Amino acid sequence: MIPRKEVIYPLDIEELRDSTKSAKLGRSRINLHESDESSIHVMLISLLSSSSIGVHMHEDRDEFYFLLEGKVELRFFDETGICSTILLLENPSENLPRTARTPKGTWHSLEVLSPEALLLEITNGPFQPTMTHWRHFKS
Image (cartoon, rainbow, N blue to C red; front, side, top):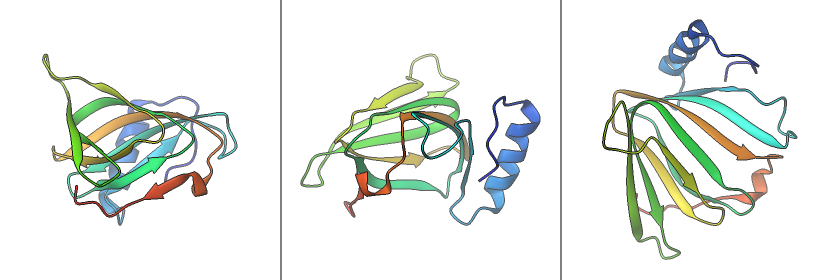
């Protein structure tokens, strides 16, 4: 993770991309919020196609995604692990959405379909790891 920033410049995005290429999980982020205790969390996230965010759910928060570049698949699951909805986000695109909201209490995952993706994630804080639950549904 790159240290917190208040303003993001093109050079910061290039540094983020470089950091992502060497990251073990194929993703990296810049936090625009001050700390885990902040009431709003804003993160600029870079992901490679080798990266995915597994099936998880937040008890206490919605998540908002704004795709800046690339193509990702956001999948929603029911309690039994059945994928109920697949939402394709792509930018640039004239026909596909670029933003999505994941309501609290919703099982979801994110998979990168382009060589890399850049997205802005916004959610409320403070961050409480015990409020995020992971499942091993087949995504």
